[in-house]
Image (cartoon, rainbow, N blue to C red; front, side, top):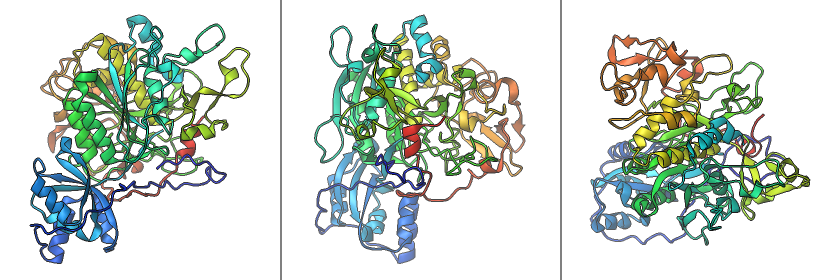
Length: 596
């Protein structure tokens, strides 16, 4: 959990504490059942290890037999009453049904984990781990203002579901004509928490980036107006994070499940997830990834924050790259590691000129752990972004911090130096993702028939190829490039199959190869079967810098024009397990203050 409890020691600490939230209901009493008995000890452990994610495997290595574990049990088919009774008979307390992924969320005594895995109807065990938030630059750098003028693109008629800490009512989220809120419904997926507003402030800030219309800073008294991207789009608030920005995977899966079931009723076309957790298993079995894939295939565009773990060092060095922090490759979080979704990294402004913008040092880099998926897909503005403030949230008590407070005098003529209670700043890939979600709303307003795959292809093909300050190409930092909304709206590319992000391979000589078979239908065709351009030249890399070279050992692979530095090579074969309270760089300070 990225804690917002600010103290004098905050700037010095580097540990990120992630707390797993357990349901408050009492565990079910053991029942007699037809649970399958365990085989011998070594065989039972092997069976358990084959079905469990790395978080659970690591827990069991401690040989501790007391305590409880919250996990998501995936069944081989639709869970039956009898099968659930077997889980209950092993002491399991089922606290949430997740039919969207043929699963249940359950608390199980640690001593019975192997017995649960031994059941023939159990396909997978995944930790119900904690997920966390990732925290006019955004509008200008993305081209949203130009797109609004050229195409009258406002996102009108399109609904974006914000899966976050909730969305509070705010004047900038009202319809300027009717005065009614554009939040058409708010749903709560937090157990034992009253209300469905925003007790944190993160979700409202995200919603403002998507859809804020600037009404609280518009008029003769104001020198600056703080707009969102798609200023007339509607919102659905799905609250899954508490006042500290923490929640569980099962909360998020339940919210996605609701969005899929109600997409037609509320015209939900976009799902924004500015949250996530460390990767502990392949996206093919990860419950959160499986849920977002289901949403994608149902017709909802899913936009995910890449994560804020891109720094290799906790403090800057004069010899390291990435603003002195070094680059931590292989740090994309779940569900951003899923190949179907649109994964967004964050950029920062250097001098106010877009051409000089660079990747924020904290923005997570690809490839994804375990599966080596090419991520992020693109980057967007995410550093020190001004958006909506909600009083009463956990962030409110830090309103006096210079890092993200917005003085009234900075945008109101004759205003005081007191900090605004309408706007504030946050930083992170959490802020970059809703910039892209707003762009998607604009695209769908212009052409409602677009599929999620065509939307993804157009965003990536139209993105501006981007390089680091030294001019080198790094698709694991910038993906396809920098979001360009006017170019995306002008694109006419169409897909003929799923626009999955491809995997990459590292050869013994250090060269990086792209699995072109995942993106090329036939010679002469381009991205994901579209008859446009050579994707390896236009989507990844700097224009024609990527040679069209095939690997003699595997003709399906194409050389990716990228220098495989030792730091990048370290992303392959990483078997470390971060668990729920993994040690890493504490980005709470960065999320609040951003970086210059």
